[in-house]
Image 1: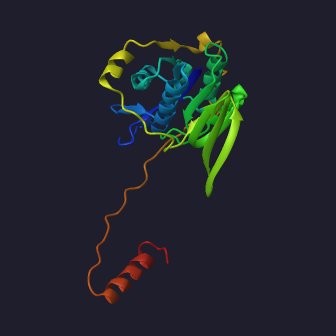
Image 2: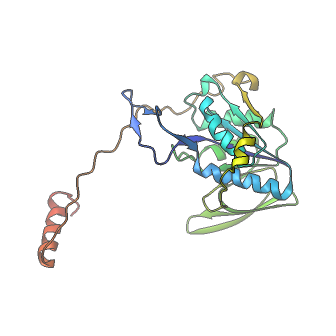
Amino acid sequence: MKIVACIKQTFDTEAKIVIGGDGQISDEGVNMILNPYDEYAVEEAIKTKEKDGGEVVIISVGSDKTQEALRYSLAMGADRAVLINDPALANADSHAVSVALAKLLSDKEAGFDVIFTGKEAVDDGAAQVPSRLAAKLDIALANVVTGIELADGKAAVTREIDGGTEELEMALPALIAAQKGLNEVRYPSLPGIMKAKRKPLDVVSLADLGLSAEDVASKVEMVSAELPPARKAGQKLTGEVEEVVAKLVELLKDEAKVI
C-alpha cells in the first residue's frame, strides 16, 4: 500500500508575529514547526502502514528550511520524503501548491492508495489545498475527518459538519483531511530521530516536474499585513453592587460604546 501525507511547515504557534517594514510577515529568527493539523495526517499515515503494510511518503512544497519538518515526519516513522523547492514557489498560494503537488502525485509519485493532509494550515487558515488537490487528481475527498477505517479498497470516515457528524464511505484512492482528535500523535523517539537522518529525502524543482513558473503563478497575493491595535489595560471595579453596576453601565456606554 502506498500512503502519502502532504505537509506544510508553519510558524510555531507560540511565536511572536512581527510585521516587517514592507508590510509582510517576517520569518527572521522565528521557530518553524510541522503544521499541527498535519501531525494528525502523518500519524494516521504511519498507523495505516503499521496495520496494512506498505510505504509512507511525506511530500511538501517549501524552501530548504522545510526539510526540518520533513525530517521530523521521517523521525515519527515515515519511510521517505520529497520536497518541491523552486524560487517560483516562494510565495505560493493554495492554487500554486496544489498544482505542484498534483503534478508530482500524478507523475513521479503515481500509484498512491490514500493521501492524508491536515484540514488546514494554522498560518493562513485557507483550508483550500485538500479540496484543490483532490479535484486536480479526480479523487474523492473527506474533510475535517475525526475517524477512519480502511478496508477492501474503501474508506469509511467520520467527519465533522455543522451541528454534528457525518458518516461517509468512498472508494480508494481518496484524500483524507485530518481534524484534531483523529488520533493521538506520537513523539519521535531518539532512535527514530537518528534513523531519519539516513532516510531518503529527495528535492525536486518545477523543471523536474515539467512545470513552468507560469503554471504555478499564484492567484492570490498578500498586499500587506498589520497587527491589531494594542488593547487598553483593563479596569477593576470595586465597591457596592449598585455602584459597580452603575459604573459598568457608564463605561459600556461612554467608552466601549456598546450600549
